[in-house]
Structures are given as structure tokens and as C-alpha cells.
Image (cartoon, rainbow over all chains, first blue to last red; front, side):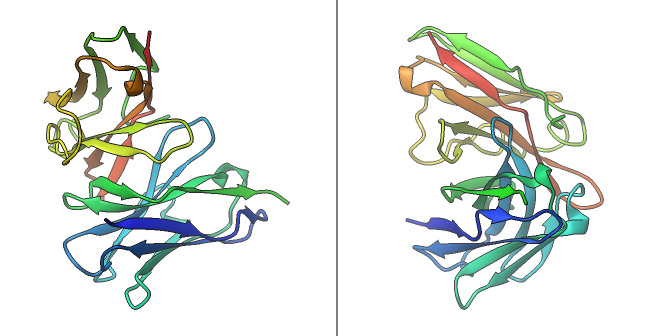
Length: 120
Length: 112
């Protein structure tokens, strides 16, 4: 059974960089034709796809966040990571990592989510 | 404002059937068969219920079904049960200068 777990600071100051890591267990991040995505959800609001990475290292990002997002993968640690720069209060949300199935457009396994608050 | 439009809420009684709509454009829902549906209970991560418009992942009840007509996709839940009460989100691949995924704003299902 594949499991995903997000980790990283729960509090980030405005203008700084948010950094999160997702650790995958129960299977190799390199096996199969899967994409690995980050998705976020502000409190009481809907889901927003941030971006994804394939194990080859190729990435796709949400155009609305593209200038501030970097997603990377470390296959030796079975992890992938998110960096979001120049954060503001609008970036406060629960951040989920997820496995992308069906060419990466459906998400069949999700982490439990981690709340990141942007505040001074 | 979300890229895909869903009703804010729907309700039904136990045993009844309900349908949740998800309206997009020819650049997303109408143009590709990559529509998915997710169920989210409070404080929990979303769960994939339907992928590629009408396919159910292993373990998902056959009371859940998906379909699409033009730019509108639909999720139907038959034989409503109390545990179906949750938020439901649709998503779709969307064509752009770069491929990405858009979500609907979510629909709160209340089982009366």
C-alpha cells in the first residue's frame, strides 16, 4: 500500500520561501508511470493544483503560480519536494502531496496534508 | 473563482439518488476524457471516486457513477447512505501552453 507523508515548517514569514517534502513509502517513486503532485486547500475553500513532477525530472506547474514554484525529486530518498517563493497570507493553506495516475490527471493516493500558515 | 463550476450544495434522503454537475469548457471537460471526482470528509484528504469520466478505482462502491455530455460532467450517487455526506470535487485536464489540472469549487452533499 502506497503511503505519502508531507513534512516541513508549519509557519512561514511573508516574503520568505515555503518548503515542503513528501516521503513516499510502500513503493518506489521511480516505478510505474506516475506523476507526483502538490495540491493545496485554503481553509473552507476548494482544491488548487500547484504542479507535478515525473521521475525523469520533467515538471508542469499551474500557470498562476509558475513564477514562484519549484518541484524537485530525490529518487534516492523516495521523496519529492515543493518550494514556493515570496509567500503571502494568501498562500496559507493545507498542502497535500499526491500520486498522479492516468497520465497524472487523477490522484489516487494522497498524503494526510500539512497546514502551512504565512504570518509574521 | 474556480475554473470548473459546481453547485454549492445538494441534498437527498437515504436511499435516493442525487447528481452533481461540473461545468467547464471545450478546453477542459468538453475536450478531454480526463474528468475525475473526489470525496472529502471534514479534516480528511480527498479520496478518488471516479477517473477518466466514468471509471471507478478498485474498492469504490458501484453506487458511484460518472458521465459526461458536452462541457458538463456529472457524478451520480445512488442508494444514498449517511456516510456519503461529504464535499465532492470534480477536476479535469485543461489544455494550455502547459498541461495542468483544474478543480471545481466543490459541492456539499447533505444526506437528510
